Length: 114
Length: 112
Image (cartoon, rainbow over all chains, first blue to last red; front, top):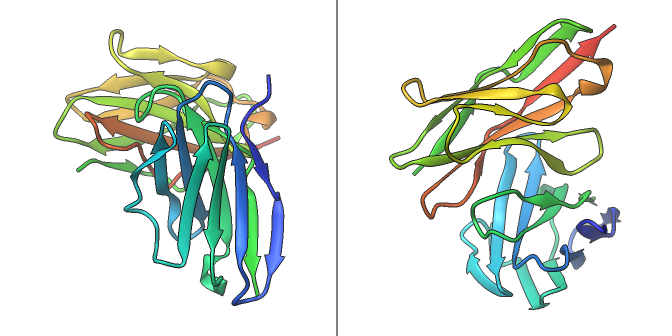
């Protein structure tokens, strides 16, 4: 079975550039989560979708970050403009039980902003 | 609000030794508790979970955890570790309609 698929796996960009991270959740899962992982802050929930609708975006750092889920099989996380402090590993996860239950994580997108 | 504290950031052990990774939580409501494992350059995967019922929960790869409500703990244990258990382990709590909250993680290093 295909798991959560994220792309790109690695992205190196320069400050000020737009970055788009992509995620394909597991088929049949109705909840999708974007997390950011850094050494300093650990694992932070950025935004959570249920049935393609954003439910909680209180973790989105600032207006430079935006996320969309146009359909049940695709989501994007965009950073515009990017800054060096955005360097982190970004994980997408999906679930079929909303906030409760097991999250299935992708392998992550490692972003480096120079 | 709920929170999770993983008491040890790093735990080094020798192969075949027992290990316990500690996790304490705080929540004003009943909780679900989870342990996730992250191998290098990979995403997290579920090791085990407590939703209700028996307080001793068995997971994959020989790990188990015990839910202790009075001590608000959910420590992870394995009687004999292997080199392949080297990874980072995350405790997580979810209570009521609140979102899942992860601890800072414990890096387990198993040495030969």
